[in-house]
Amino acid sequence: MAKTPWQEFSKGLIKENPVLRLVLGTCATLALSTSANNAIGMGLATTFVLVGSNTTISLLRKVIPDRVRIPCYITLIAAFVTIVQMLIEAFSPDLKAALGIFLPLIVVNCIILGRAEMFANKNKVLPSILDALGMGAGFTAALLSMGIIRELLGSGTVFGLPVTAGFLDPIIIFLLPPGGFFVFGLLIAVANKLAERKGGAPAELGCCAGCPFSAACAGQSAQKEDEKEETAK
Amino acid sequence: MIKGLIAIFLASILTENYVLNKFLGICPFLGVSKKLDTATGMSVAVTVVMVIATAATWPIYTYVLQPSGLEYLQTIVFILIIAALVQMIEIILRKYIPSLYNALGIYLPLITTNCAVLGVTVLVIEKGQADASFGFVQAMVNAFGSGIGFLVAMVLFAGIRERIENNDIPKSLRGLPITLVAASLTAVSFLGFQGLVEGMLG
Image (cartoon, rainbow over all chains, first blue to last red; front, side, top):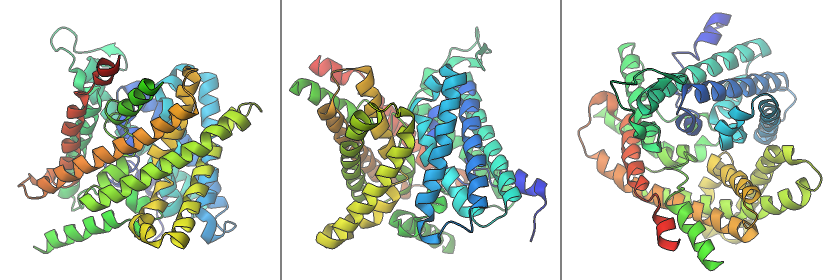
């Protein structure tokens, strides 16, 4: 069934949100949601790489031999990441310092390889670009909502503007790693609850589903079997 | 010198734990930590690849990329080296040490796209640039320590998850959310190590 362009774009926002529904790219989500500004920076950088890689992979999908596709994809993605690194270094050194190690690590962000494998290598260029834009927007939105929650609770500001000063002391632990795990866990719980109302399944770790080697991953298949047993009960 | 190396080793396990402090390698941490034996197998494989990858990328960066002014190629070169290395390790293990291949082989392809491995190779280069005394030996100790830190976090967390299994959890928290909340509490316990290494050896 062919989807309209709007559906192709919008599915990444809510229904197949890469962070909260497909659970891809967890590392960057947890690490860079300490403030709303970082979240937007990371979201835009990832979106840029995603659009670039989805476009090229979709263009080259008939040229790249199936057996060596993963190394080809990784090289293409690494090239786009290098471009982003150079652009950010040139235009916003502060952002580069804030993103730190996670800027080069966009290469191994499962959202990008996942979309290449699940979408771009099977679809034409235009749907692939729309898919990338939608997924990128969904990633940015999820990161931003986490960033706002953590910044508000952790430093009492939103986008650097004081909000809760005077009546609520900042709860610094929300800026530290434990706060990241905690807020992320609760957001997924909320997303699960909303999805359940629409008859959707709870979110499962998608790093593996998006990963081309998922068949090899024993942990994930064991987990799936466990869940099947649970539903059978 | 030795004292410095011990400090780097302990710091990379406890205060700079890759999973619980730096958010690197979260996917395997959440995905493969369901059973103790798979968690151990995965972490050993990650440690091996981290050490070998650092041994390969550090000299290439310092003696090839840097003198020729090609630092900006770091990301693309490193990920290709890691991908090639993982393939080679897999082939060598399959040919010469089948028993080890059977134990670790299934985890190897996953490791190419594991951010902890690319992370350690990039981070040790950064550390080396910030501090002139941080050389190849220090980088190797750091890589090994990070792998062991990953192992510690995985094994601890596998134990915690086995306990969660038998509990009655509210429906919408089941599965991933409760795992993340448990990870949050584990990370709190690792915050307790802040300052420990400096206090012990400083």
